[in-house]
Length: 345
Image (cartoon, rainbow, N blue to C red; front, side, top):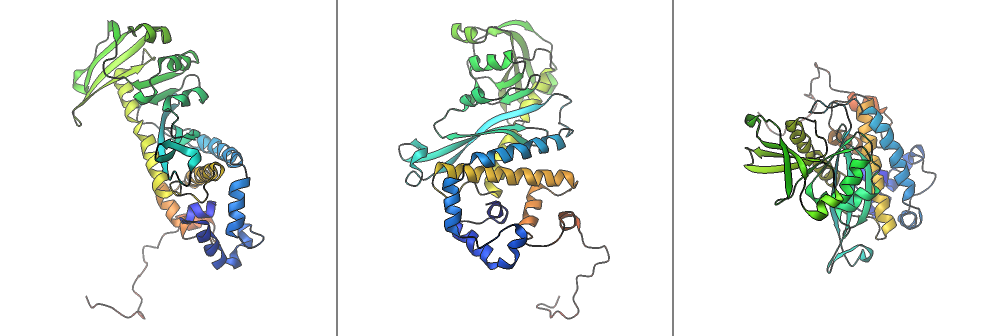
């Protein structure tokens, strides 16, 4: 299944045909016999997806140690995470267990992305009907860390639980938020800041859910001609830093775009819940392995370029450091004297 992710195979039959074409190399890859699509299909149904989730957790732990010193665009020593989800649409006739709407099926991939990587530190796969804010209930909170979220996670009761755990959040405020201002802090209007207020929530139920002080920072983006409001429970951080941290949240959107474009998580090799989760977790393992490879070998190439090289070299008996770092010498002459010319220049 990792071979299928690396080489962009479309189906179990495709996997079987490609591996059969290189049967002389299968022994060196760890295969002890012929790979049949029926065997893969049975494994997708019977082999618990949690095996691959646990493997991904070990790889993520290693990758996060490697990327721990990665600099952020803002001067901050604490860990910074972006929490978001993406929806993967499915065919209702093939995946009836994932009913999302009357005529549509879908699953959701809830992801907590470490912005120093970016490496996913937490992933939860749910049905498409699961609301984003429910991910806060299963999140293992790291005290002192910053959690950056869109306004879909604006639930003051759950945010207060995050606050009591010693973590900080930055979340986009909804329009019409009822907020009582206690203190107005000075700002530099040339940076785009409009206001920086300390206060409390005004609504009865909102204040009951979050009785402590909050901070409301308003910012005007001249490029997009849009105004933003950000809520945070960190009362001392510079207001502009709060805005910059929220801007970094876009990295989780890029992560979703990357894995959807370059890994196989939109078309599945099996229709059961176990098969779908197995394929997604193996895709995550492949992504993290490539990220580890890039860091350990200090490769300048992007993750996509490394993945492309590996996709055409999976059967090559060449060390990875040579495969990914070998370049043409400066004196390389690309002109072959025995090659016939198709066009005369």
